[in-house]
Length: 141
Image (tube, rainbow, N blue to C red; front, side, top):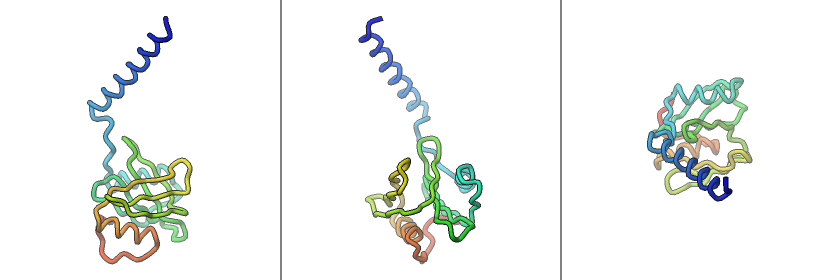
């Protein structure tokens, strides 16, 4: 089989699969509930129980306060149909047009864009930077 034909078949096949997945709704980001956010965190860090969880209004991210007060905050966020969890160590917080941009000191997840409303963004920024929050903007459990 000529290389040109093989290349067309491979590219066409991959494109067709991607289009089919998108049209069937399997490319949407997962929306988490409190329970799903807890499970996602504990799946990644079973040795770090949760003291407090703050879920974003859109369900795309959750801020985790571990029971061990010395441990840094954690973050669970949607990444396609799955979730990712990381501790927020050495994090830089920047305001973005729609929420916050977190620059992590982690080569596997160097940056995260959180889509939050203005009051959520302010509260999350205060929590991440270690300042007390004045009024809850997100659902707390």
